[in-house]
Image: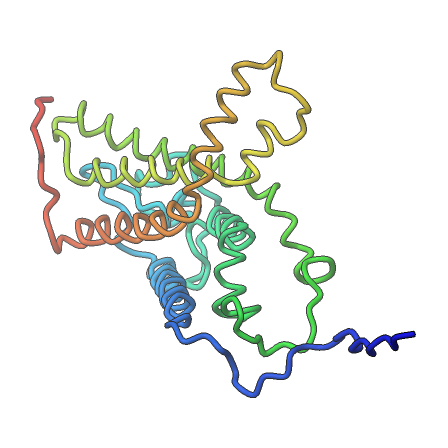
Length: 274
């Protein structure tokens, strides 16, 4: 009778590799660019909301999205289209104290942004086949990361604020067309920003879930199916819109800043009478 060769014991641990990683490509470029991009937006946004100036162009009714809605009693006349609170804010409190934290919470809990800063800032992991510096992993099942599940609720807030930004852009457009100033470059900047904000908000995974996540069949809901289909198409580009809108928000704010501070003049694309 032939003897059976002994079988090797099953491997239960990680492979013993002396090198930090076997990857030879420039895997660190992506995480590094993510850190630089997100940091640039946060630093710029913090500097601007604490500046408390050059956020409103009364002549053309331009209001930067970083200050909408303006709630302090000392907001520039005309900039608080929905009224203000009865007191002035201290220097460290942004005029848009309600909307800004909620918008940041919406983006901070966004599925794409979570992936982005987990891999870059937190390095969990930085890239595939690259070891992470953490000894344990608990996921999002307990504090503090369990709070990431609140993203579905912040979506409704972001939807309302996107409507508010749309109202600001429409008001500036109507003011220009009917107020004797004509259509300016600032109108196009604000409208472009609003359109892209809608693309980012509607491409959100929570939005897709609202329109079709709980349904077993679209058979008798053709309109809802069409809407879910369009949102699904946008959803495939959610990452792109996440980055593009960071850029358009800064661009829109910077443009209003330059015009409000009289650094540049707002070009009139065509003039109206009135």
